[in-house]
Amino acid sequence: MTRADVAVIMARGRSRRMGRAKGLVQWVPDGPPLVRIIADTYRAAGIPFLVVTLPDLAAAYGAAVGEGGGGAILPAEPGGDTARTMVLARRFLAGEGVTHLWAHPVAMPLVQESTLVLLRKVSRLRPTEVVRPALNLQPGHPVILPETRVKGFEALDGWREGSVRDLLAGDGFQKTRMVWVDDHGVVSDFDRPEDLPPGSPTSPGRGVT
Image 1 (cartoon, rainbow, N blue to C red):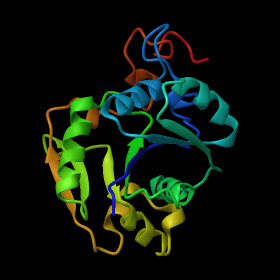
Image 2 (spheres, helix red, strand yellow):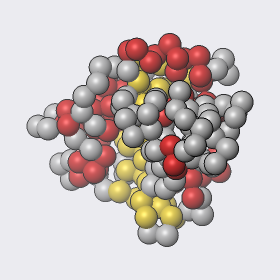
Image 3 (tube, rainbow, N blue to C red):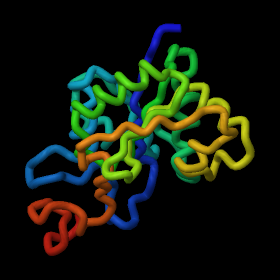
């Protein structure tokens, strides 16, 4: 089977801690939103992407990723966790010949292109394994999952509320290959306004719009 990767940018939460949709937050004033930074990194690496978000945010996310190509938007109802998002993405992509799905939270915009290239290289050498980056023994994102891994998990009870940990554990037929990287972006999660740089439009002291 021909190898085919799609990055799933997970933006289906209500972002209560951030106060607004995380992926639409600007990193710096007049700068691109987080989702655009992630999308452009995947474009640079030559990896197609799918943004999974809420129906009422689909148009805004579509505008935010821009017209650079390589991506699509999937509106999906709220509920569940990471595993549900990945299952919905797999269902949407069924019939497209996708062999590997990359789980990438929308609040993690600083992953480097070189890291994506390295992860893809390792995954091609170990196509049946889950591949995940780690910095200083701390597991990070994105996580590359064989499509069969997600399909197998979907058959198990509890997938609708499952987390990434549950998805990786699953029925145990896939192992995880950790890839050690020197990239703080793989563990940098900007979940709240205070996590953003001081100059960000939504950092503390500037208000949330």
